[in-house]
Image 1 (cartoon, one colour):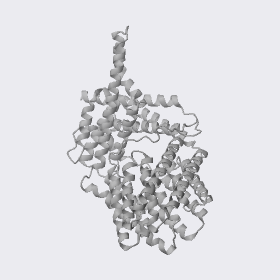
Image 2 (tube, helix red, strand yellow):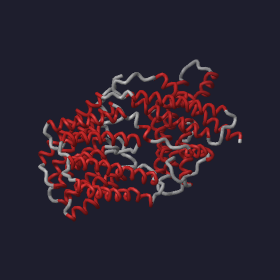
Image 3 (cartoon, helix red, strand yellow):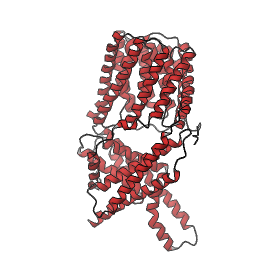
Length: 567
C-alpha cells in the first residue's frame, strides 16, 4: 500500500487552540526571570542551561493540576537527564561523529518515551533541541553539576508558573475538556439532524413510497445513524473530544463534587453521539457556556451512570511501557534519520550539525504521510524564519538586554502561532534558536543564516529518506489489535445487554470501554493508511466492526432509558 504525499493543504491554517495563550504566557514568565538574572550578573553564556528548565513550562497545560504536577516533574527529570548525558559526552570527547551518534540515540529515546507516555505537544522536539545543542557546547566534567543545577532551578520555577493558575481556577482543565466535548457533540447532533432533514425531503419527493415502508425506515433511522456515524468528520471529532474529556476526568486523584458534576455532563455528550435524534444541541451549548469561569457546574440527569466511572477508576492503570514495543519502528527511524542528517551536515563542513539532527527529529510523526507534511512545514517555516532573523538581528545587536527581549518575544510568538500550523510557529522558533546562539557571544549573521538553511534542507531530506527506508509494518498490527479490542468490547457489552439486571455500573463502564476502543480503532486505521508499503488493511472487517460497535452503543442508551421508564 503506497501512502500519498500531499502538497495541497499542508500549509493551511487551522483554528487556534482554546488555550493558546497559556503556554505562550507561561513560557515567557518561566524564561524571563532566569535570563534577566543572568543578564544582570553578566553571565548570559549560561542561559542555555536555564532555558532547559524553563522550556518545561510548555508541557501539560491541558491536564488537571494534580496530573499536571506529576507530568511536569517527569518532563523536568527527562530534560535534566538528557542534558546530563549530553554534557558528560561533550566533556569526554571532541569527536563530532561520536557526538552526533549520541544525539541521535538520545533523540530516539526521547521520541519513544514521549509517544509512549502521551505527554502531548511539544513532545520530544524541545528535549532533543536542548540535548543536541548541549552536545556541542564546550564543557568539562567539573562544570556539569553546576550547569545541571541551573536547569533544575529554572525547571522548579517553571513548575510553579504552570501550577499557579490552579489557585484561581482549580478545575479549569476539566471544565475546558468537558465544554469542548459538549460543543463537539452539539455540532455532531446538528450535522446529523441536518442530514436527516435533507434525506427526509429527498424521500418525500420520491413517488410510490408506501406508508408502511416509511414506518419501517423510521424505526431504523436511529440505528442507521449510529451505525454510520463513524463516517463523518463531525462524528470523529466529537468521539475524540468525548474520549479526551474522559481521559482528563478519569485521571487519578480525589473526585470532588465539581468533578462528578462534570462527569455527568460528559455522559450527556456521550449519549448524544449515539442518540442524536433525541438530543437538544442548544442545551449542550448552554451547558458548555456555563462552564466558563468558576460558576456552578450545571446539573445533568443520569447520576446513576457514574457507577460506571467508579468501576473504571477501580481498575489498575495500564503501564505506559507496554506502548514502547509498537513504537520501535518510529524510534529506529528517528535514530537513523538524525544520525545520517548529522553526518551529512558534518560532511558539508557545517559547524553546527545539531541543527540538521534536530530538523530530522522534528519530522517523525505517526506515519510517513504526516512525516512528509511536517517536513514541508518545517522547511517553509525555517526559510521564512531566517528572513525574520535577518530583519531583527540589527535590533538584537543593540545590546544584551535587547537580545533577551527579542528572544522572549519570539518565545511568545512561537507558542501563540504554532497551534495554527507548525510552519507558522517555526517562523518564530527559527530566529529564537539563532538568537540563543548569541548568548555565548557575537555570531556573524551571514554565516548563521547559511548554516541554518543548509542544515534545514539536509535534515529534512535525509530525515525523510530514512523514514521511507524504515518501514513500519507494526502499524497494521495495531489495527488488528484495535479490531480485536472493539470486537471483544462489543461482545461484552452485548452480553450485559442480554442480562435481565446487569451489575450496577457495569453496562455504563462497558459502553465507555467500547466507545474508547472505537476511537482507537479509527486512529489506528488512519495512521496505517498513511504508512509507506503497508500491507492491505482489512477494510471490510473494520467497517463491520465500526457499524456493529455503534449499533451496540445505541442499544445501551435505549436499554438505560427503558430501565428508567420502568422505574
